[in-house]
Image (cartoon, rainbow, N blue to C red; front, side):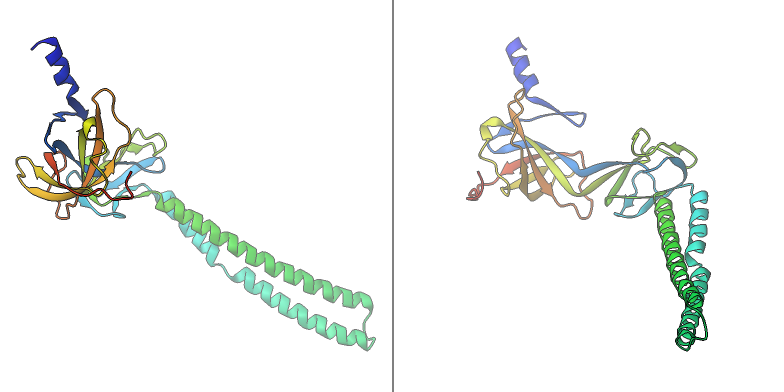
Length: 284
C-alpha cells in the first residue's frame, strides 16, 4: 500500500468508545454503531462503608430502585432521637394551660380593679403574667417546629445512605462490594456500579461532510443490524451535529431505536439507509 492510500484509509477510520469502525458510504447507506441511551457511573453522595449491594452485573434495574446501602446505624439512631423530640407535646400543653390560667386571672383582676379592690400594681402584674404566658407558648411552638426540622434533616441524611438507580437499565459492572469504602460522588474515584439505559438505544453515525444539509431531524431511515441480530428497523434522525470534524471530514448523526424488550444489544455494528423525505420548512 503506497503512502497516499495509507493516509486515505487512516482518515476513514473513526475511533468510538474504544472500537474502530469505518465510516464508509454506499449511496445513502452509512455504517453506524448501537450505543446505550445513557451510561452512568453510580456513586454515593456521601462517604461511607457499603453495607449491602443488592444487584450484580447483568441485572435489570428500574429508576428509583434501591441498589446499594451504606452503613447507617448512627443516622438511624439520630432519626429516632429527632422523632422523639418532635413528638413531645408536654411543653406546648403546659404553656397553653398557663396561658389559659393567666387570662382568667387577668379577667378577674380587671373586675376587681374596677371595683377598687386591688391596686394598679396588682393589675399590671396580672397583665404581665398573661404576656409571659403568651411568649412561653410561642417559644414552645417554635421549639417543636425546630424539632420537626431536625427530624426532617435527619431523615434526609439517612436517605442519602440509600443508593437508588437514576435510570432504568442494566448493570454493566459492579466495582465495590459490602465492606468496602466509598469516598463519595465529589471525588468520583470509587463508583459503586456502572449502569446503562438500553431502552431506547442510540444509533451513532459519522456521515461524510458531502451529506451536510441532506440529513435533518425527523428524517426516516432503515436500520440494518449485522450478525448475530440480522434484523431491520424503522428509525428517525433525532440529532444532527452542527460541528464538522475537520480531521475526518465527517459530522455526527444520531437516531433513536426503541428497545422495549431489551432484545437488541448495545455495541452492535449496523448500517443506516436514509429514506427519501421532504425537509420540513422549519428546518434550516
